[in-house]
Length: 260
Image (tube, rainbow, N blue to C red):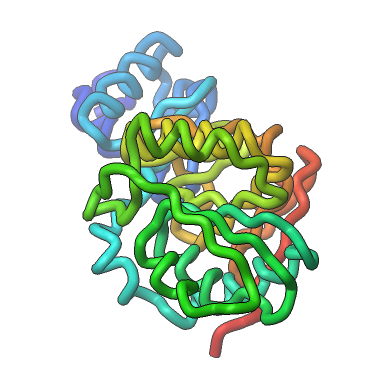
């Protein structure tokens, strides 16, 4: 059977294989490889996105950002890798700054790694981060209130957004579900994305800290464009092409130390 005669489900399976192997697919390349029209590929990608198999972007598609479960579960996953990312991330912090940490297991690790005696002001909407810092006398802690989403581990909603918009942080460590040069930063939850958008708009610099599995992926809800990203902290062995692509767009890329 020629590529032209493949059933849609068979093309979808081939496209998904390319997506998983390559990290992204380009519609023009797929049309050439499968010997079908661009319209056919665009229809295939629309159908696959509707089925939750990929996330469409201009000219192609990306893998879906991973959903690693509720915050209680995510806190138990890959602690060594997250600690290494956190140590690299706190190297961006300067004395006396206002730091915003929203919810996320990597951001909990960053909270635990914050340097002593820097005179920081730390703002968070995450109860777990507030608990980790509550007894620190060398910093000022501001907790954003509102309805707490137990799965995300964050105060969200109108009240939380209103209070967060009143704070001009120097560095916003945004919890990411997916990050890609084309799709930017994205989140799995609509309300979480709205909150992140508000904080990013009010912050002087936005920093994304991303594990390998989140690089080159996209979640359903946009948070910020790559142009809005000041720095990206990645794992020691993260894909070099991904790193170069971000650097080419003016994003400072910081690699974490290797984890034994």
